[in-house]
Each structure stands twice: as structure tokens, then as C-alpha cells.
Image (tube, rainbow, N blue to C red; front, side, top):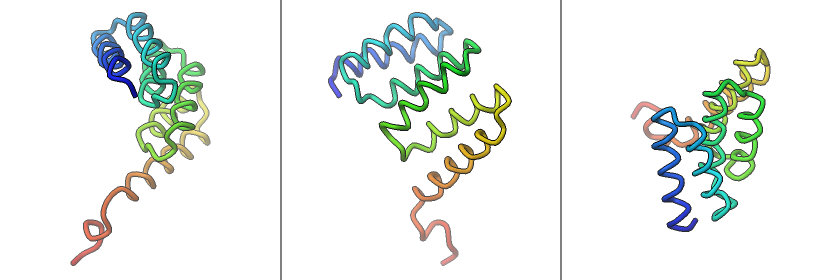
Length: 115
């Protein structure tokens, strides 16, 4: 990932947090143009569309993020939330379970079991 792509990503995130969704999308688009494999930028673009209530479009971008990084519990969780919002409970539960599995897999075994 290029440093410039990261700058656009960070600007997009600032706009997302400020509720400036169109500006956030513009910055995430620029980040993706510079680094087409920038999974976090696709994920955050999905977050923007989710906040705008465009959940089908959000799912599209969460899918792209998951394709690029299938080990991200966060991406599966975000897609699960979007599925739940449009009434696709089965898909939501599947994604929440996958997110949980990935979270547990990231914890070193000695922290999960008793000494």
C-alpha cells in the first residue's frame, strides 16, 4: 500500500466519523485507485453505505474486503450487521459465527485455557 493511499484512507475515515459521507467515499475511492488491494478501504466504503442505509451496496464492498482479507473478523461482523439490517438473518448469523471463530483463532491458546 502506498503512503498516499494511506493518507486518503485516513482522510476518508475522518470524514466518515464527521458524518461527511460523500467526502469519505471520494477519499476511499482515491485510496483504492492507488492501492486496489486495500481491504480496509473497501470495508470502510461499506461502512459509509451502511450509515447511508444502502445495505445492499454496503454488502458489496464488505464482500470485496473479505475477498482481499478473509481472516478479518471485523469484515465478517460488518457484513453480518448489514445482512441483519435487510432481514437476512441466516446470512447474518453465519457471518457473526465466522467473525467469532476468527476472533477466537487470533487469541493465543494459553490465554484461552486455564494454566
